[in-house]
Length: 240
Image (cartoon, rainbow, N blue to C red; front, side):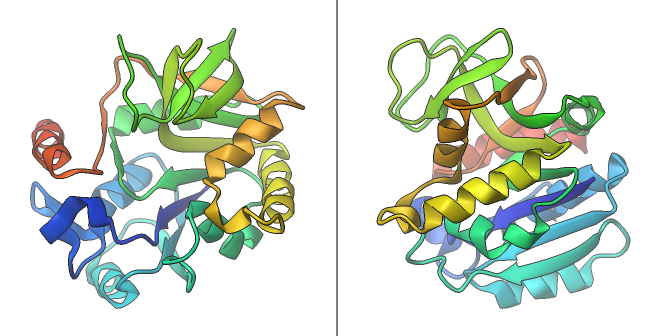
C-alpha cells in the first residue's frame, strides 16, 4: 500500500505559526507533523509515500532530506496551491491514484493503532475513515452514513449527520482508479478549482457504494487553528 499525503497549503488559519513555513512542519514533541505521519506509516509497514507540496516546498524537501529511515518518500509539487483547493493537489498527483493506497490530509495526526486498523481493513473500493461525537460544528467535515455506507459528506450538512471524516481515506480493488476518473471529470467543470476532494467522494456516493470505517475511541487530531496546537501537543505526548 502507498500513502499520498496532501501538504501543499500554507495553513494561514494558524496565523504566525505558518507565516514562513507550511503547517506540516510545525513541531509537536520534538518532531514535525510530517515526521509523525511518516513514522506512523513506517510502524505499519508502509514503505512508499508521496507528499504533495506547494507552499515553501524547499523547507519540506530539506526536512525530508534530514530524515533517516522510514518510507521511501517522493514529492510532487503543486504550483496551483494558492488558487485551487485540495482537489488540485490530487489532480496534480492523479497518476499515483492506482492500486491500493491511502490519501491523508497533511494536517491530521493519527495514532499507530488507528492506522493499523485502517490498513488491516481490506474492504474493496473507497473507504472514508470516520469518528463520532455528540455534536458537530461548522468546520467539521460532516458525514451522513448508514450501515457502513456513505450517504453524504460536506461541511454544510445539517440533517442526519452522525459522523465526521478525519481526513484519511483508503482505496482498494479499483477504488483509487474510480476516484481518479471522477477527479479528472470534476477538475474540468467551471467550479473545478474551488472544489474539495471530498465533494468528489460525495458525488461518487450518490451513484455507487462508498464505505465508511468507524474508528471511534482511537486517538487522532487535526491542526487547523491555533487552539488545535496545544491539543496536538498533549496528544503526541502520550505517543512519545
